[in-house]
Length: 461
Image (cartoon, rainbow, N blue to C red; front, side):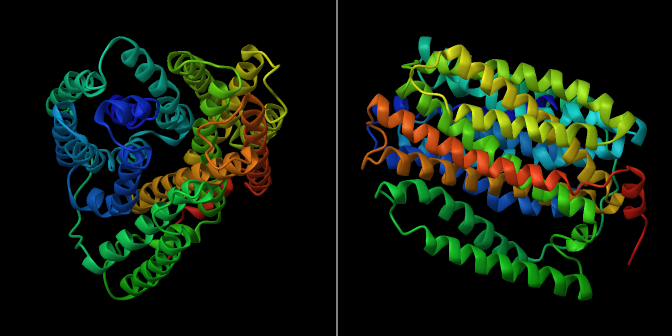
């Protein structure tokens, strides 16, 4: 959990640092965006392969290898003399990061007895939710006093401590299978998931007229690649060893949970991307102030997740997910009505209520999804769940940034008046409200009893 938090914190460090990097390295905003887009593309390409990796190798081997790769990438980024090496370092970091969330989820679900699963999985799923809240605050604080290289230099010793702790303490809890790597599946995974994330990441630039290629081109290529990937997995299931076992979708509970997570992750990443634009343009907050604004969200996620885990263990998911979805959707709609006359405390209250509602959905839905699968499908389920989160994050960012750009009614959404920023922010948050409404509808289809989940987990061919 600690190592996963560290690598995810690193993922979020460069968001608020992009203006500094653009000025210091003398690059264009479009080039600078690749420091985050390239990272997300690498994750999207590699995460589907983590199901195979977790089946083929020991837990300890995977952890030590992945963290070592992450450390190498961090060192390259810290020493980078120009944009090119920095981008290489970020991509190497992403290669090491890709396996951590699915590995953590699959490991926790194996280790924890069902009677305590809600409490522990609530903490586990809080890790990827807290990092986006803490990352901007850490980045803003570091950049206020130190050059951007220290964003990587400070991570290095922490990663080394984690590597040593893993080498000394980690035990293998799984037996590797004789799984083979299907290269066609890997290639189609790269084409499908990579194409979708790349295309979605271009939508915001396309609306403002700055995209290098029309977004529909990589999106169509990605959709075709994804369809071919699915057909390949079905064929491999009949005649061999699938890269990603699609039997996970035979579980109605898993399918409903992953659809709900699609909408939750879209808003989770999208609102976190758009809200700083509004806070800067409408309220005039500095980078450090925005980081401090987002920081209490991590505390709320921790507290709500811990309390929600106990509720889940006793009463199941429904007392959390449906009320949480109502709170989540209502708070987003309330945020969409705020303007430059609203105080920062009003924005903060709306943000924290939204975060609490999101936490009430995120942990129970994740626990519900993996608990509905048989143990041999845990690696596939965690890989699919994490992949959907990545795709949803890219889609949410694309949709809300596009809504923000359209709402601004300006050719350059980076240079807006206060009035334009307010309207742009309201438009984006109204779109987020529509997405939240879809997520709320999804929670109504969650089974009423946890016993139904056990029935789905029974062996079937």
